[in-house]
Image (cartoon, rainbow, N blue to C red):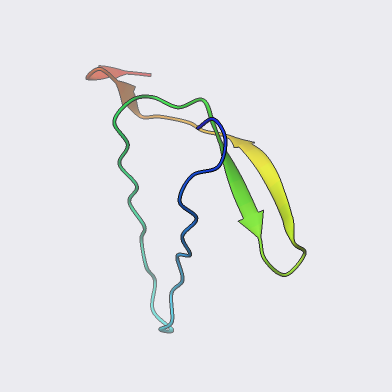
Length: 56
């Protein structure tokens, strides 16, 4: 994603395993991850299982 976007927090408040599924409209190569404790933003590379129904 390019530039500021909506920042959201995903947390598991239980002691059980959880999964978070994020679905976006087009393939993105990178995204920004915000670490509130440190007050920093770090750019991360993304990976995909498939793009346009073609396995990666």
